[in-house]
Image (tube, rainbow, N blue to C red; front, side):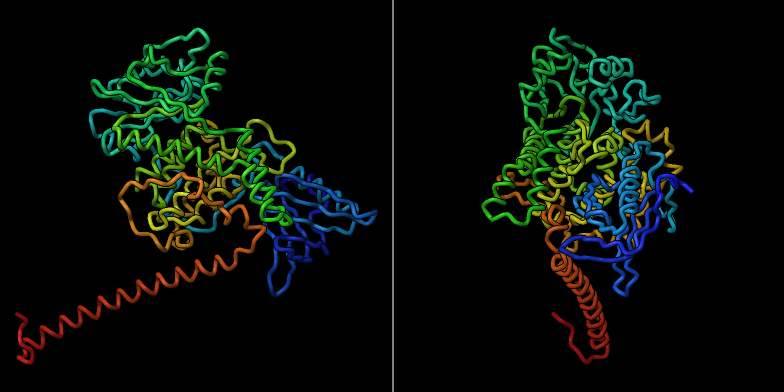
Length: 552
């Protein structure tokens, strides 16, 4: 049996669980290699079923010589307390959960042991290949797929297939890759309907001596028309960019890239972002705060400021593409975090397809998974963990929060509800599916995820599952949606951050009522249509029988 040596006490009776909203449940605790289970075995069916990898921190609180409380602080922000009456069992349970929640070998995670008991209607592993996603664009004369990175040696964090200008050969691309941090040369992210394009990359390695690379310039200039200029949006502050330059990194000097104008729009990342989220969750969990103190804690967390800065940067990029008809390159340092935030949100604003369920899945695949965002590295620890490091960051959560802000302002323009965004948040930290495993495509291939694990998309796209995450207010909107980034327009995503603090039952009931009204409206519209057709048939029969005169 897997992990049996790590679980000296696999089953334990008379454990009292303190969950959300002061609820207490007494039952049997069961620990497996991947799950923490607690069942009250009552008619109310009260139970806990949680993946152990979701545990962010384990705290121990002794209650004298007779046992103690194991406090589990989770990556989905909930806090669970388990009261255990035996000191030996208390120690065993706490130690087991600490061990099982801290595995670093991803092949020991639950997705490698999970076997779906439902038919696979669509293979989520092959649904969003670049050749399919960019098929229309590749039929033209301007773009092509390059497989220069087929062995992952040009850029370890890029996928095998990348879209680049057709006039640029692979030799030029390889030279550009050597001039970019981590080999992340400029690649196509999105082509706007007006012909302008959105590119992303990492920082150029100009260094303190202001080195230049002709091939890198040629690659960038290839996307511009004669006499046109583009923008480089740098997601670092000017000071941070200068510091990077002194350490071997840098930015595009206008003397070397005369057709490109560089603009700095700083976005927080890494430790600063996680510290901000930690302060936010601490404020949300403290129910003793007065109104003034709560608002002060919310403001001082700076989380909403990061949401505002990110949305503002994406709006500027969208304006460059749409209103100024200028192509844009986005990068920060590595091009793995803030860069992907901006390119993704820009597409949410400009491209109505990204507001559909399939479009969102394609966006996450294309701009995050295939683009090399290191989910396991960023999500190994979260707000409660005492072991977190500078590689941990809630960048993907910031993306989802920004999408929620746009959803609130345009509630009928998204096919999916915020419940789908919450689902993505949860599965990006702990999941039975392999979709968010692997820091890049090379790792995913090496672990053979497509053969050994199930895809989240295969599960989600089953009609009976997907129905739960659809927006009942959805009305397809093919227009560009420009969100307001004024502070008064932004909202705390309470459905996520306060769901373990404030009971969401009434919200869920209201949502179900909206769905019921939508279904009723659909039913009545269909009935009205049938009645109109019946009336038309009766009128024709009456006219033919001479009972009714034809209308003039």
